[in-house]
Image 1 (tube, helix red, strand yellow):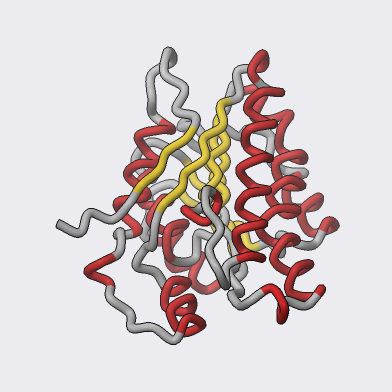
Image 2 (cartoon, rainbow, N blue to C red):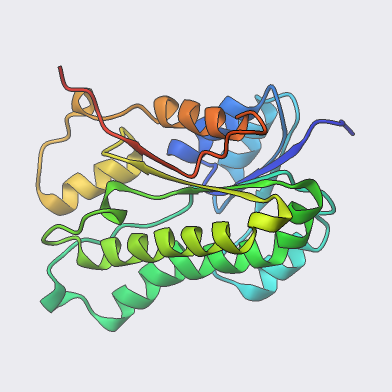
Length: 229
């Protein structure tokens, strides 16, 4: 067992979540959350102090069981999420429920369950949001609504936990070169142009900076855009 601070990263099997795990690997012991157990095992084996944490985030029973053994937690990074695009007149109740369940409700419930541990360590919650959490565009209504809700959750949590020392950072990246982005571009029927997108590692480095910020600097919100010069 190590004396390093403990970070739990959801969505760690790929994309931004995996990049965040790698960025924190030299400063934290890691719990790698996700659905793809094989991918989590592979990532854990490549990092010095990491263990897979394969949990279905939308299952209250699974979350409760998985968090019961977490006695210490210093950082919680919420990176798991889905994006189902389309006009609002075709967005069914199932799409709304599925998106809000994963992008908002699971975040709120996991945070609630580990909040005592975060308070004990004066820890840090990082919410990987989106540019869609700041502006809603046509075809993005359901996803944007979930990200606006995630931003509201972060703002409220930050205010409520101010006296406990728990920090809350909302990160709003633009388009990022990930498998999820490939799926988004397929839904948009558009070309995939990775050179025009942020690298997952760039977002992860920003997260690392916020997590390692000095005691006098609470990084509340970060907006990142691709530099297309």
